[in-house]
Image (cartoon, rainbow, N blue to C red; front, side, top):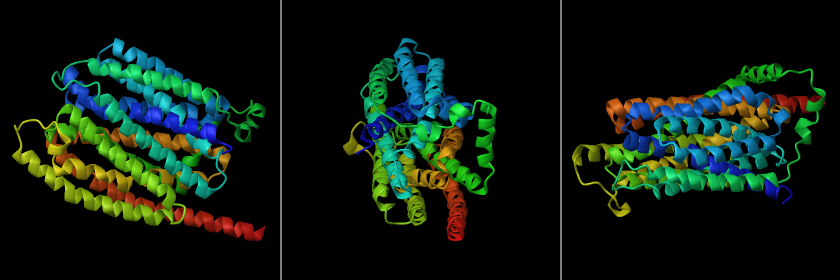
Length: 428
């Protein structure tokens, strides 16, 4: 119970940003209704979010220990609180872009800080991977909560209404409470900051170069590919599932957003369960089996959507969970099977590196994740507009196949590192 208050703060911070970040799927749907924006144009919101995350990491992550993990998170929470208060006052598409740029900047600070802080509040690699999964599962609970919070502010009778923007007042309140909780939570950062005061001669540019040097290691390079592909899969589905539900399955806007929460719930459950299983079973076996099941689910579920798309065109909009087609319940379950991948590979790479490299590595994690999310959303949006949602989601099978190969190489590299460490221990 030594670290209970700071751990609670990490969970709450991740929950807040889960709501904000993954509201992009809802906002993509809403800006199409409110501002007459096309699918491909709306998809650019993902880029404003993810590219700002990547840019911030390149600028800040390599020397975030100089700022301090706790201070960086407080700055992030303060900024999103201000932006949430401003968003309803300026109802325009450009403001949505600016909003997600600010969210992306803030999340980069929070995610790097949280990933680095996990190493400070855990005592073993098993405890590390377990806590990582629990925190990531709480992130998905935030996504689930966000879908319901946003759906409460949507007027199905008037699709073009701007009343949905009032949700940001509620989110500003959450951000303020999270700020206060973190402010009073103690965090000992001395193990990673003790040398900073004596490193005045080392410039920020050298910190940045150190982060880039990490990327040249074979283990890190392969990890970056795995993280990029995973987030590409997850975000392409998560960001476009509300639109898929609305335009392909003919659900009402409110129901489309609410049923998208099944994906978040299944992902949260998958990571929660994995948090226990990883304590006893090798991470690689779990992930391979999970990807195989995910592939099977895509092949079984999407044909059902294709049938609905062909037979229900022009039908009355569905506004009840009981009337929703089976595919609306089944396809989002893919979240359960892909859920353990991201926290597991993040934990494996962080556990493989010394603690003073964790902030830099977390920066690379966030950058690769951000680029994967942007790429996935833009590609899916383009495919959705030109070929339909069913084809767009079928394309998720391509990165799933590639990630299976990349994970095999990643496993070989981690095994090689462990063998080298064992030999060095024997020599000592």
